Structure formats: structure tokens, C-alpha cells
Image (cartoon, rainbow, N blue to C red; front, side):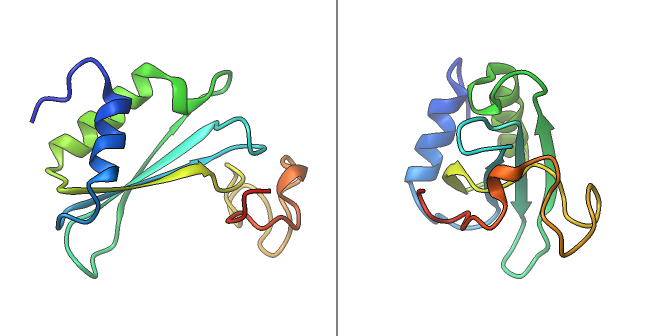
Length: 124
């Protein structure tokens, strides 16, 4: 399946198609606040019950949702893994730092005060 010059369009189209079987690709955006996505985590789940094979892309200065090179790499990665379905969130769902890796477990991220005490699934 050819992706073409518009990987964002290909990704959104795959996501709109809903569950079409495995492998399933998952795409989640993270950032220091709700307006700037500095990280995208992409998982590929080969079959029901399988652990996701995760890859991450980062942008220090731009927004990963608007970075053509990153979107192309994601689309190519999912295509090369033969995904039938894509599940993609429509917003930034949390801090790009990882609890227990970038800061102590049970604490709020010291780099992203925006997310402290915030419900990441709400639209606020």
C-alpha cells in the first residue's frame, strides 16, 4: 500500500476506518502542555493479547504532529509492519517525560507543571 506525499492524511484515513483486524498501530501524542506535542509514541500490536512494540519520535523545537519527516517515518513504520488498523488519539494526552525514568514514581513531572493534577482524558 502506497502512502504518498501526505502521510498525515494516510494516518487519519487509517484511523477513521476503525478496527479492521491485527496488526494494530497505536499513536499517542505527548507534550509539556495541551498545545505543543514534543513526543509521539507509536505501538504495533501484532495480535490480540500481544505486547506492543513501541517506538518514539521527539521534536525539541517543533510539534511532532506537524513534522512531515516524523509523520512520514511513522506512516512508513506502520506500513512496513503491515498494520490493518490504526488507533490514534485526537489530542495530547500527557507529559512527554516518563514516570520512574525521567522523574521519581508517584510524583508529578517537575518539567511539565501544566499536567499536575490534570485529567489527561478531558478536553480542559
